[in-house]
Length: 285
Image (tube, rainbow, N blue to C red; front, top):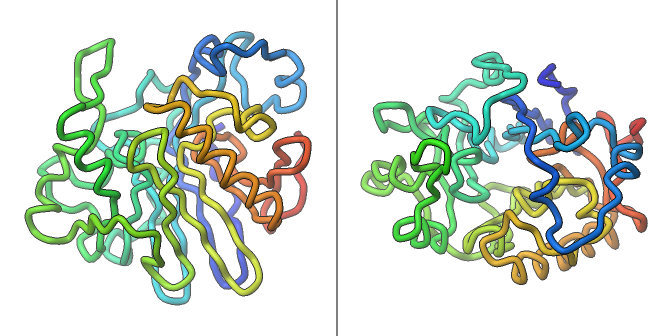
């Protein structure tokens, strides 16, 4: 499942998926309070599941090669490693095609370590030395007082403390506004998963691609965006963000990319998630 994924083209923008690996996480933690027929879900989206009682949690970052320069959305786990032991790992190969010096902007959807752990090197210096880093101040403040602690080893699993040097040297932007960080790359505040969670809307000509961050974890949420998620710090706010943004994605026929899906690209259709291959054509389930 960690094989190199085909690039996705959105007009003049080349989107590369950087898959670090995947681990099985328990289905029992998903969609609390809902009676989900996981057998039906597994039949519809076999790539999303692991065994009979797990889903395949992938860790993706996305490199946007735009006419104005490279933009990286999320940075992988870095020195933090995965939340659960990898079933498969791409290791350093996941980043083999990325020149850190070429990245001009790094957008962090939020500060959980599977999205922001690779922001700096082990010594705390910027991993992408020529980049401007973008995070929402609500996350910066939240994780200062309420860090994520892994239950298995007691270690911190958010990148707030590791990023202290970026804030000190002025390379970290904590501008809270929805805005373009680079032409055609717009950040959107979509709180709930974390207080400062962001999604990213990429446009090229008439085409648009929504990078959801952690608005979605399993395909069933695309069909039921109003269902609460056990992954959200504020489930009710998370539902509101998910409903609002997925409604827009469906109505405006945006392409969508999901950080934790084995097949990250698709669309939100009337009946739920519809996978796509390179270039936006439907893929087999």
